[in-house]
Length: 282
Ligand code: PAF
Image (cartoon, rainbow, N blue to C red; front, side, top):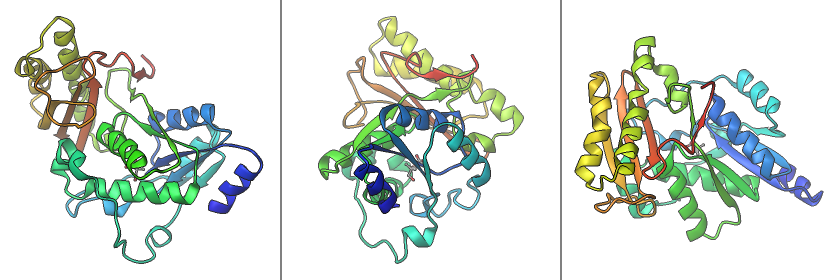
């Protein structure tokens, strides 16, 4: 992989990387398109990274369809698919790992011990293998995006990190490979999460600045749908990810909820709501 990448760079071409765990939806394909708009050649990595899954999580069940992914990625501009095996990535136990520090104390990090250590470790490995000038990640996983940016800054990694907008279904549901776990009835009610985030944005736009009131506005549409079990709903600082007691335009409203077999996450910037996101088929 590194030789391929270095040959492209020797030819004077820039290399972009889109790290993924496969089972592509439109959100992934937009990341590939965005990378292609920035870099001359695009590498898409597909690797379901075992070290970012907890023992009770869905590693074995995680959806996979390499043939379909390959065709879709190539059709949207990928020049190279990097599909390492677990043995390629972890020929020996990964003893040295990237420790995320306090940014992982909040949101998903607080509920998924070791998750971001696994994410940062595999992302740093991928960046070192592919040596891209630019790498593109989705905004839906906002804590991951903030942590990767921070890692690249703190560890002087020579890759620019681009964060692409969340891609939503026509009814507002943020696209995720895990949406595949939803039954038709769960899929019908899942957009309540995005409606909750929009409600917080609307309240903020109407002048509400009290955190409790903003969160109550967000909670109402979510609780109306009995099936969604909230894991967290918080307004956090965009840099530290710590809960914010003086919410502003840039503050992030982040939510995680369980719906049947799926754990869904979503977020918006309080000042923008979903207006900066991409809606497909609306
Ligand atoms: O967002 C994902 O799909 C994964 O966390 C990533 C960044 C590919 C690392 O395994």
